[in-house]
Length: 192
Image (cartoon, rainbow, N blue to C red; front, side, top):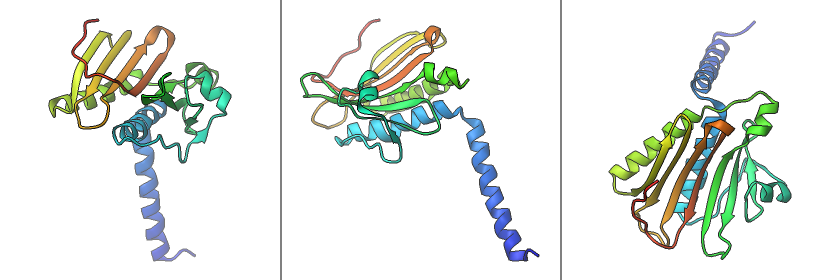
């Protein structure tokens, strides 16, 4: 027989689980993970001038990491989404960055899709807020967010190098990535 105290604990646990499920249902998991990796790991690390942290993620073999553009050979993936976090260095080794990328071909085999609009909306909301606070400057915004879209913003905070943040999307080939990378000059707005 289950005691009243056990029923209360079980009820509270069920409520917590149902709240977690409701939140997961509100988000497309690959889009949620992509934004989470970009903002929580990539952006925070780059702006804090720290190494990218892949803790809790599955490390990709060096050959695979290099094949997806991780110039340092370091890349990770969460177990529940076809997105990767890659560590980047410029060819000169002077500039550091990171990239979060959707892997459409791998996801297609498992019939998993990403909500591109969710990723674009989260990036744009973040960029617009940071621009309004004068922490970022608008550099470029091109295309149609429903077909082919590019947005570039740049840091205006104190650090050793300015950082550019890029969202690139092409719906015709199910391609989307987010990138943060140091640059050597503060840029001005550019035309498409």
